[in-house]
Image (tube, rainbow, N blue to C red; front, side, top):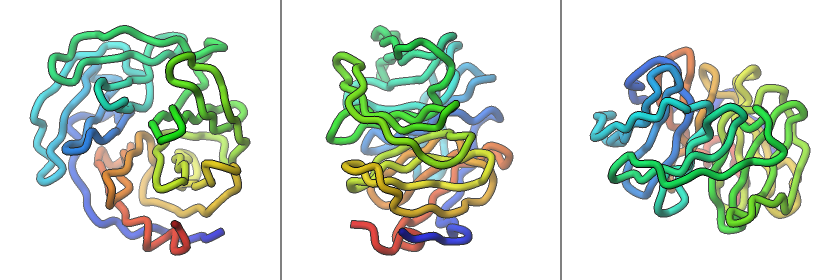
Amino acid sequence: MTYCESAPVARTLPAPTAYLCGLTWDGSMLWHSDQDAGTIFAIDPADGAVTRSWSCARVRADLGYDGTRLVQVGGRPKRLLLIDPNTGESAGEKAVLPASGRLTGIEFGPEGLWMCLRGPTVVQLRNYATMEIEREYPVGGESPAGLTYVDGMVLHGDFGDSMVRALDAQTGAEVGSFRVPGHPTGMTWDGRHLWYCDFPARALRAVELDSVLVNRA
């Protein structure tokens, strides 16, 4: 396990609005969702420019991309809202049972759909087709927010402790943890940088994992 007092920030982009929720990567651009604005934004990672935006009044938490559609955590109780990224139109939704407000982070890995939930804090692997739980690991922190998948690891933000925690996707063992500036919410991986929403700074920040998880695969 590795631990770093604070991760150095490699890049910072301004967020378009103020209530930062979700963040994901579609292979070429960042997608970011905001609860108060009720909007999902496509953001150019080169300069932070908003290239398109779609209304989504039910935004509640993190955002993912399933290879075809945006997958937004939204509604009351929380569920997965499927959205066409080219048109902003609804493509359906998936229930997350048992129905609750616990879900705070999502991202897809080769195994399926990874989630983090609070009260108690756990990371789950679910079958995306059936939404059945296939693995569940207890993890640290009381305020999980945002999750992503990187090279056999699942990483999730800890809002209250200003940390990112990493676990082994196969065993659930803790790989490491590190502090980040601000308080993280949505989170994603672009193949080089770990991006997270810094809620109080109204910014999207990127860190290089090699500087903080030195033994990662």
